[in-house]
Every structure is written in C-alpha cells, then in structure tokens.
Length: 260
Image 1 (cartoon, helix red, strand yellow):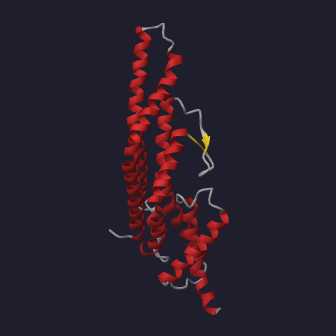
Image 2 (cartoon, one colour):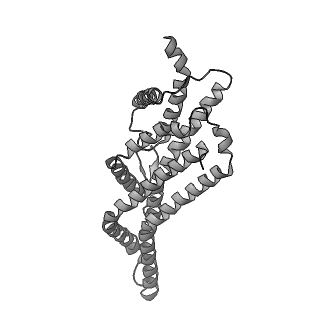
Image 3 (tube, one colour):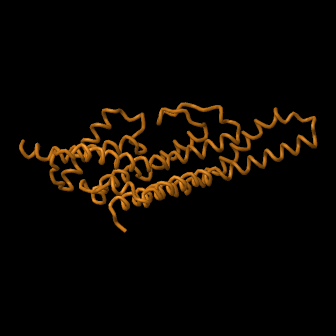
C-alpha cells in the first residue's frame, strides 16, 4: 500500500496524458467507442506504460497541478495532429461536393457526431478502414508509449511551446495538411470545372438547351464515374496521408524533447 501511494502521483500524470490523447486521437476518439471503454482502456494503457518504463514517483507539491496541465496539453496536441490529417480527407470531400452540387446534402457522421459532406464521409470511412487494416491504431499506441522516451515527465514543455520552432512546425503542418486536401480533390475538381466550362459554352452556342436542368445531374454522374476510376489510386494517397501523420507526430515529439 505504501508503494502504491508513492507511485500514485506519477501514475496520475501518465493517466492524464494518455486520456487526453485518446480524447482527440483518430479511431479512439470516435463517438462509437463507449466512454466507459475509453476510461478503462486509458487506465490499462497507463498502468502498462507506468510499470514498463519504470517512471519514478513525482512529489505532489505546488507544481504538481501545473504538471497535470502540461501532460494534458501534450496528449491533446499529439492526438490533435493525428486527427488533423483525418480531417484533411473530409475537407477534400467537401471540395468535391461543392463542385458536384452535393454540398447542401450533408449527413450526420456517426464517427464524429457532426454534419459532413457525402463524399467526404465516404472517404473518411474508407480511410478509417484502411487505417485499421494497416494496424495504424497499433502505431498510435506505440506513439503515445514512446512519447515518454522523447518527452519525460520532467520535461520543460511550456518553455519549448513558446519557441519559434514549435510555431513554425504547427503552421507548416497545417499548411501541408491543407495542401494534401487540395491534392486529393484536384483531379475531380479540375474535371468538374472543365465540365462547367463546357456547359457554359453549350449554353452560349445552343440557348434552347436548359442548362440548369441537365447541368446538375450531368455533373453528379461525371463525378461519380470519375470516383470509380480514381478508387484504385486512393490506396497510395491514403498511405501518403498516414505517412505524413506519423512523420508529423515524430517531429512534434522531437521538438518538445529538445533534440536537434
């Protein structure tokens, strides 16, 4: 009992980081996962991490509350980086939906509990299935476990958060993820834009055609046909997104650890 009481402070810090990570990380943060399972799984992973790494007890002094906020911040940011790259897929789908005319037909995404575009929701579900088939959830668990080797409990996280390197990293990660969304949507967006140009030329040369009647279903049909042809290439695109995800996580932990 005395050993448990001595180790409780260090275990709670580990538990705070892992719980915050599961709140924002893809797959684990899904609303389909019961809250009781998230809490129990967080306790289990925190216990394995605390006992496996042999972390020393942390004194519960006046700085202990600040340490709790520090661990929560690290877990939230680490999980948010992973979630941001999955949001890229829905962003690319929203670009396609705007060109196809389906931007008003949003549906409720059961994974996030928010309204999402049709094509974006389909790509998100496909990406989630591929991520699980690649054992990406195992890599996420490995990332949060290895984060204690890069960012120990005694690390001066707040000082490194205000550094120019961290600001540059967050801005670069955001712009790179937004650029990935454009690259994923570019083939369909360009093709549908050329369809709009063709319909505009047809409206000028043959005014008797009701472009507003034939234009919307034509764009939807062309968009769906192009999606079918582009589906085989989505595997390599999603692999590129997943690679960028884990590369950004590694870069984030490197910056907080102070390594060159």
